[in-house]
Amino acid sequence: MFTEVTRADACVALLAEVDFKWLMTGQGRWIDLARFHNDAAYSSELLEVALASQSFALRDCAALLQIHSKK
Image (cartoon, rainbow, N blue to C red):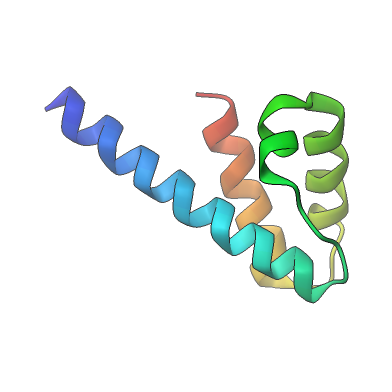
């Protein structure tokens, strides 16, 4: 059971990252996912920008990524 939940969470997080990357691209910001995973300042800055966006989809996606990053 734990493995299924973990796998499902990983899939949700991966899909959220892909959505985040494309939604940010739509806002004119290119995302380096390797850096996003390894540079806390970079990822925090991008999430702050996304959370302040006028795009509901981008704000929602950023909030989901924040939840998954705390796990």
